Length: 428
Image (cartoon, rainbow, N blue to C red; front, side, top):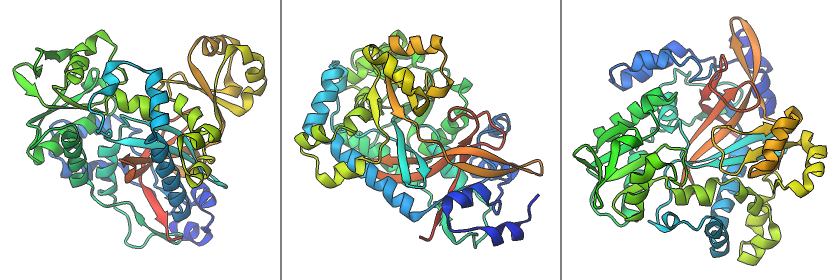
């Protein structure tokens, strides 16, 4: 294995090259798990962590301050666009369900902006609403056994503990939805939560909320009922829901209680269908690239220029099928309401069968931006993994940064040495 001293000597300040070559800060997974368990006394947590071999990556990722500033500029400009009446009217005309107009002042917890770093700066790949991982990354970055002086002219990891900020974010959603005081009981809701790969995160979140005096349960939506006045779990009234479901408009019959309670204003739910329609529907990337329309809606030239860094995204239409097929090698195809890389296809991997499914579905085509790579030491050998950078935000303000390392077509948690990685920022 390359030694720490040798690697440090050959590190440069080209941050793409640093990520490709630097092995200065390998992460010890056993030590990370032990630190997380020490910080969270949760029954069964050690076994849950050890069963998820690719939850945390074997290395941090380096990001320049310049790239961080450019990512924030794009996020700020997106938030400015989404605040425009013309943009919102267009989105909600496309999704006119009454559930979209409830609790309109709420902002949606844990919005996430995912980027690929390129030599020309960061490029936004997509926006997600109920983005998982933030509780894990917060604990990870505050459990790192990093040296006091890091290599390659870097500054430090994003190591501020944001526990109080997370709780305040949920309380702000509560207040923006017209409530006073604090929720007595919060439910973390997902399909079969104990079977989810990120179930350890739900347990850490539950523990965090309870430390701050909020009774918290983790439940499948089928265990909830709505009596016309209250959302209930057994006899317990649920005041607020942290929504982890991927049924973004609550149309599934198993989610009727959630939908009714939200529509009647008898439970605060975040993120809610409104947030997904406004932020995470992939068709919104088409709008964000429409300079003429954004200008007509009143977006400033400065914000429009920042949005030009978003890869071109266009709707897939069957009448242009031959043109899309011809250009497919330079495109990524994504379902409008997709999540977790499901139904996403890189154009050069397409078969005719899959292509026919894309034409029959509701897809967008995005110009392909290759992911950057990160060197990882595995079994005394060096391998290169792809990564993206995720910025967790609330109301457009960054709360937490993370990278996700992987191999394959899209992000996953099945790659040796891959998983969530902390970010270390450069001094420049």
